[in-house]
Length: 122
Image (cartoon, rainbow, N blue to C red; front, side, top):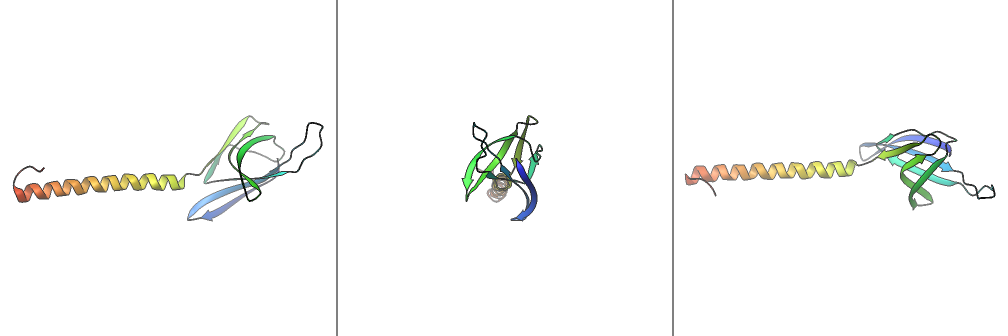
């Protein structure tokens, strides 16, 4: 791995970190192949990687860059993960908030109906 750059960016009010680097590849006879541009995005990363480390990656291609969410650092044996679930967290919190709201509306309707009808409701 070469040319590791670490940048912080603001995307939709969430601090997003971006690691950009190139992976140097060689064929079996030792001839150098074209480098692979790689980008790893997330709100945080677990693990470290340095220039010169040998890494293994798996990802998807997007506009000429390999986008990854994790990599194996073969030099140190570490596995580096990007943590990027802000959308999932917002959706989960919204679902929970709606469920609580619906529950309290149900309790309110039940209370009002029992007061006006003078009996247990439903």
